[in-house]
Structures are given as C-alpha cells and as structure tokens.
Image 1: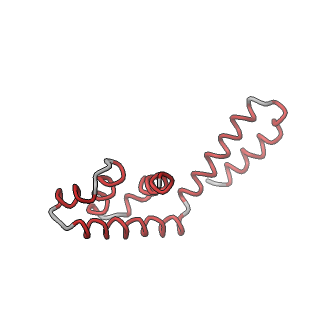
Image 2: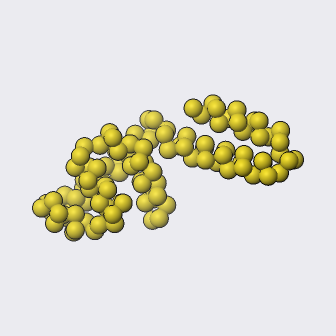
Image 3: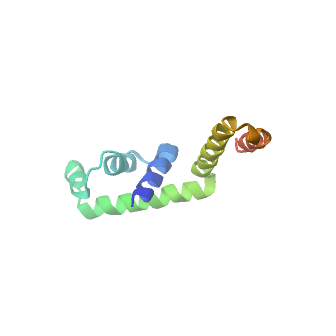
Length: 109
C-alpha cells in the first residue's frame, strides 16, 4: 500500500497540471493531507462513493499519462544513475563507469 501511495504521489506531482481543479482537490486531500473519503465527501457535500469513484478514475488517468509520457520512469532512472555516480565518486575503481553513467543520464533528457 505504501508503494502505491508513493507512486501515486509522484505521478500526481508530475501530472497534476493535466487534472481538473476538482480532481486535484480530491487527490491532494486524500493522498497529501491524508483525509478519509468521508471527510472529503463532507467538505465538498457529495457522497463518499462519488469521492471514491473520482479518486479511482484520477489514479487511472495518472497511470495513462505515465504510460504515454514516461516522466516518472525517467525520473526514477535519473535518480538511480545519480546514486551510482555518487557511489562511483567515492570508489576510484569505478571511474570509467562514471563517464558511462553520465552519458546515460544525458540521453534521458
């Protein structure tokens, strides 16, 4: 569950500008502010089911955006390469690999 929440939070960070204001509000309250479905439904004076359906549809939309645009996937690859580069700087035996990782990082741009 934590992995899903983390993934949705990242996807939301990358693609929130593509969402409607209502979708952004529901996602912010549910994922960032940790509101329950009931609390969100009371805030917006809608049914709990309406909030649930909206959040699930929005999650699916975020996944579709990622399938097409790959922003989160590229971000993860950059983070992995950066971590390898940090480790290589601290280990002189990997100096040649450092240049390879730099090239890979540039290709992701």
